[in-house]
Image (tube, rainbow, N blue to C red; front, side, top):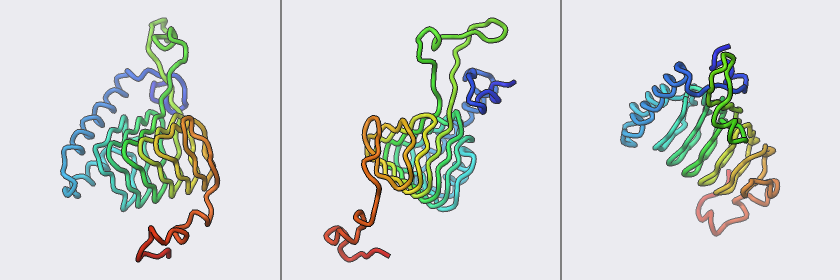
Length: 211
């Protein structure tokens, strides 16, 4: 079994494997290319982001700067907005739905390491050689999700459709759909309801109206 096959199966793998390192180096260079472009260089930015990520839907805008680890393991839906300094350490697959809004400095992390220090330093491969290993778990973010500034989404987490995650939260466990959740560790505060409608905030709406 290759290191990439182990990675896909959420098993321990060597992140220093030559093929994996080659993939990451390519993406790290493309990150720099994307981040060097001006915001109004839309065609060049669009071409590059399609080279970086696995797939991205029409109408999604990524402000930049960005940092993708592999990039090809990330799948982003339509009509999203991802603000400054998005980091996606996509050793495992990352799925982001349609119509999502990410505040500045959002981080998605999929890799994990052994908890014990000696195992984190190295373990033995089948030939008896010492290797530094990690494993990774996929992250899924549903559609119509708003992640506030400085949110961190940890390995293996699923965030349901329609959720709002408060700024600075560290999401360590799944969040069910249509909830407001916040904190470190993040916990569900309440379900979202009509009480949250902008209809109830005429002083903020001004001349605008809910459809």
